[in-house]
Length: 244
Image (cartoon, rainbow, N blue to C red; front, side, top):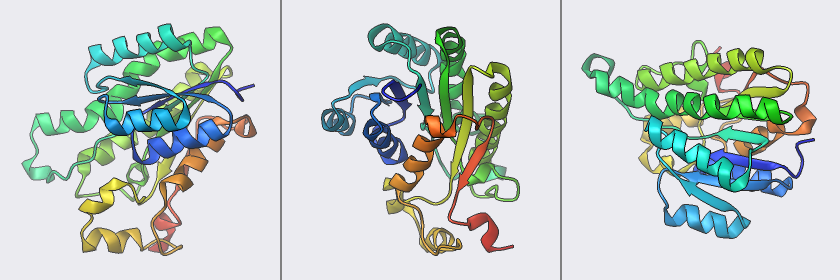
């Protein structure tokens, strides 16, 4: 059983990650919070949830490996791992450098690869668990963005990684992804009118709240979803259907 187990939420200082940490705590999990730095927001959430906090940069392979080793040493091996870290930047395709492409992949994909290479074999040896990777509707065929090409590419790769790892570590560990649509995180402050039109352009006529995405993540990680693995659950208010 995964209830009352330890859940590591990577990228949980704000937004969907913070909401997911609250949802998992409400389910009874002991939560370990993570941020790139030891920010006031991370500390505040830790105090709110009575949760431990850790800080390391997932874009740095060495720091990420040492960081996750430290989590296991101090808090034990988690039975639930949520990878909610991500980076999103508008870079025109024709102007992008190799560094721009590498930056898009560093946190969105390689960070997940690095921590899961360490955690998954150990989770199998310990009795298993559940992994949920937070992807994006931009990973879905036909919804890739021409404004954030490399973000779309990295998230698409994350979806493929989900299916491959589900095969590799079945039946002991379930691996799934959740692909949110437009969500009212603190990135809302950067949305222009074009983005707002997109955000309201789904079948429900509004963007999601972080808590609505978090509830989907918590469900996929729970025992209620014990027969679900290798899947990407799209939570976009019908955005992908709205124009079809």
